Image (cartoon, rainbow, N blue to C red; front, side):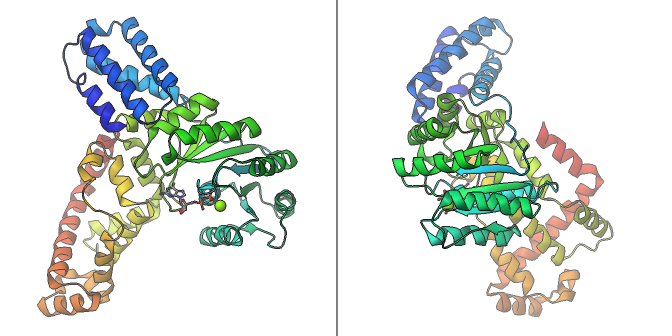
Length: 436
Ligand code: GDP
Ligand code: MG
C-alpha cells in the first residue's frame, strides 16, 4: 500500500503548481492503492470522493503549496477513517474483566500476555491471566509459559472442559486474591463456525466483561473484515486488536475493519515479543501508510524502554571515560528489548525501503555478544590492553575471526567517541530533530 500511495502522492509532493488533472490522477492512484490493500471498493470510493470535495472546498489549486495541502487532506481523511483519536481501554469494574475473541492463530494468547504486561507496567494494575482454551492442552501451557516469563499469575483448570465455568472461577480467584484486572484468553477456530460463536457468546453473557476485544491478524486482508463482522454481530465487541503489523504491513485491514464494524482499533501487535505492543494512533498509522514513517512511536518506545537511572549512570561513566564493553553489552540488551531491529528501522522515514533488502535481525548482535563474553574483565573495562595475542584468544573463544574482533573494537571506539559528542547536548538535539 505504501509504495503505491507514495507514487501517487509523489506527483504532488513538492510540486509548486497543480492542475485539476493532477488531482484527478492522484485520487485515482490513491483509490487503486486502497483497493490493492483489500480496502472495500465502496469505502475506497467514498474516501476519494471525500478527499476531492475537501480539496475543492479548500481551493487546493490556488494555494501556494497545493501538493502539501493535498497530502495533508489525504492524511487527515485517512486518520478520520481509522477512528480519529486513540481509543482508551475501559478499566472500570472491580476487577476489570477483559475478554479476548478471535480466530485461532490471530494472536489472542500472545496479546493477552502483552496486554497483561502493559497494564502491569502501569504499576496500579495487578492482572490475572485466565486460560479458557480447553481444546488444546498446549494452549494452556502456552499461556503459563507467557505468564512465567512476565511474572504474571495464570489461572487454569486442566481437567475442566467448560470455558464458562473456568472464566467464572478465574474472576472469583482474582477477587479473592486482589487482582484488579482479569484477562480471559479463549479458544478460536481456523474459520468462523457456529460452535465457536456459541461458546464465545456464552462466555461473554456469563461474565459481562468491561472490554471485549476482537483480535485479528492484519495479514488476512479482506477476510479480516468478514471475520470482524461475524464476531461483532454476536459480541458487539468494544475494540479491535490488530496483530502482526510487523510483517508486510497491510494498512488496509485497519481501514476496512473500522469502516465496517465502526469499532475503534485499540492496540496493535508488532512482533512476537511481549514488548511488541503499541496503542493504536490513527494519525500515526496514516503516516505509516503514507510512507512517512512512524517516528513518534519510535521515539516513545525508545524512551519507554530506557531506564532513567541506567542512563544517568552511563552518562557519568562516559564523562569519566569509563565506558567499557560491559556497558556496551547492556546497551545492546536495551536495544534488543525494544523489539525486532527490522521493525525499529522500518519506523524511520525512508529507511524502510532502503533496508528491505538488507538482512538485519537480532542475530546481528550474536557475534558481538560472543566476542564480549570472551573478554576478561580487564579487557572489558580498558579495551586498550587488547593486543594482537589477546585478539587471537578472544576470536578463538568466541568462534569469530580476528577481523571480526578488530571490527568490533573499531565500532566500539567510534561509538565511545559519538557518545562523548552527544554528551554536549547533541543527544537532545538529535531527539528533537527526530520529533520534528
Ligand atoms: P491464538 O491462537 O489466537 O492464541 O494465537 P497465538 O497468540 O498463539 O499466536 C499465533 C502465532 O502468531 C504465534 O506464533 C505468535 O508468536 C504469532 N504472533 C502473535 N502476535 C504477533 C505479532 O504481533 N507479530 C508477529 N510477527 N507474530 C505474532
Ligand atoms: Mg491461543
